[in-house]
Image (cartoon, rainbow, N blue to C red; front, top):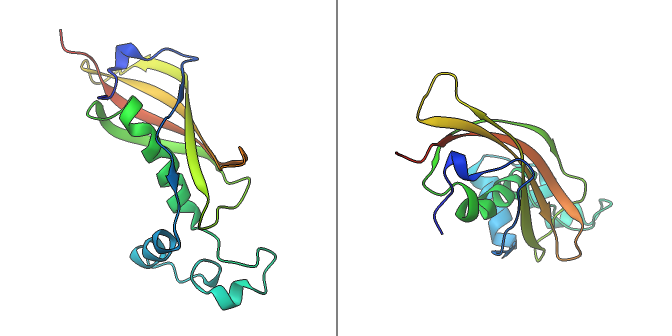
Length: 150
């Protein structure tokens, strides 16, 4: 399904995204390396044995990207002009290799663009959950969305 036009969103609308994804050790290692993050908590299994977690944590920015990415097909695929910002990002529980992540999106605000007659601004609350239904990520995101052409 292609993304929705600005006019197709309504405040309070909730999307339970069907696509889920299991995170792998390779995902975490690749992302940490690609973003030049050498933190031992992400890439050093021996170091992590001595931490409270006992194993590497998945990079939280990967988790954020995954949670938002899982929402794209239902909400913004092909209809987003730009992300305008993200706020109130939290990671209440850790993510580990082997966890399966699902995403929920709630539309919390909608307004016309003051500078672009072909667009509006939608505020999304994105939430990510693991296979135990524990919230692992939450973020508020504003996106500049195309209006449906006349």
